[in-house]
Length: 183
Image 1 (cartoon, rainbow, N blue to C red):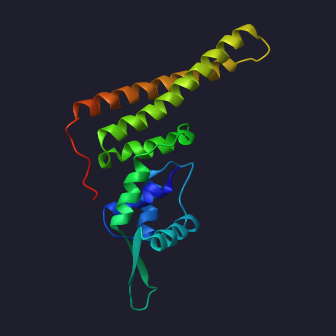
Image 2 (image 1 turned 90 degrees about the vertical axis):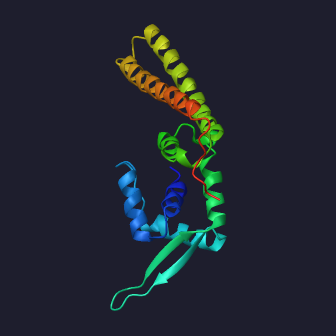
Image 3 (image 1 turned 180 degrees about the horizontal axis):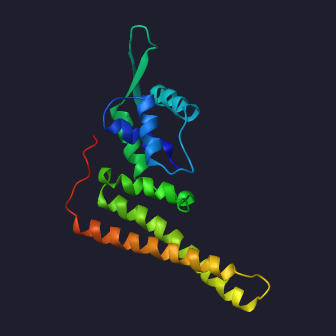
């Protein structure tokens, strides 16, 4: 999953402490993954070094200082450019796709359609694979219950393809809507 997009999306909503960002992201992502300090703080250091974010110190009496991170204009451009591209080699990753869909408000309809196309292409290929597997299974009796797995996966793929079709329709009707102004 592209944690970078999630972190930058948090900064798009205003300056935040690293702990708040980590907490917010972990509440958004599935139970199978989480973000930790060993991922987050090296990313912040890179963002600051690359001019994508700035770090400000909040001094506190009798407590450790807190660091507040803010996104820069360069960071907004980076966020937008990263978000609007769904790499082919990530098309199999459902979380990668859903992160982008959840942030569709930031990109224009043309980029939304490109992301939907990339994911749809992967799903159709996977669907073809399971149809072939099911056909082969009918000719091989030595692999019990494999068809149940193929049927389950086929149903999930069809449901997601329906979701993509619904998203296409939704954004076709909102063709005149502009994304959130980033720049």
